[in-house]
Image 1 (tube, helix red, strand yellow):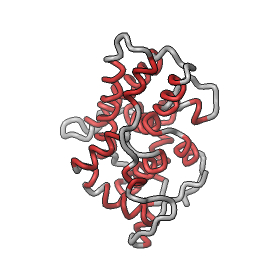
Image 2 (cartoon, helix red, strand yellow):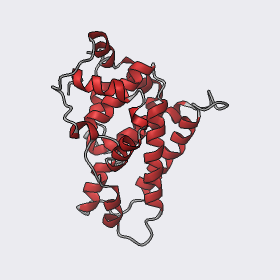
Image 3 (tube, one colour):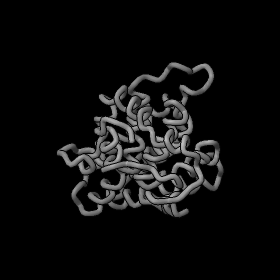
Image 4 (cartoon, one colour):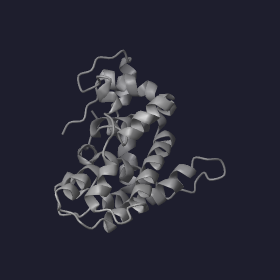
Length: 228
């Protein structure tokens, strides 16, 4: 899978990471869609990493919020059957970038140097390499095409709905673990907590993104030796 962002996608994300991500309307749309679609989620993460030199403050806040939500939904499961529980995890709205018409062939007005920087995956690869032993434990077996029992949110919904998964305890534990470490990572950007995040805490961001939106694109990026 070749991951090459269009000028339009980079143009949008360049402005998005400057502050649009914090607008109430954008946050509502991200909340309803559990982030964005798989392509645009990893586009957002890779562009943020490229332009912030791996300083992932914005994404850490967003995904701390989403994983706290997931943790809370699992916690109130009570006597509900698994398939009823997973209905709460479905998207309630579309990916905001897809809805606004952005895709692999979108035209934009980003300057050539902005496009080149936005397509540079080296910062994301650096984060992935430094934290690999930890996020690898969260990879969805369906996304990876292996025998791992872990599932991303979308594949978990699918398999619970089909009756293939009846016990959610392991999946709850995974979400709890990601949420716990992501809180530490997000807090590490605050004054007085700088330098407190471990590699496992930083890996939680990758795990959270993969859990919410899927792993296939990230795995294709991680296995590609050179940037576009």
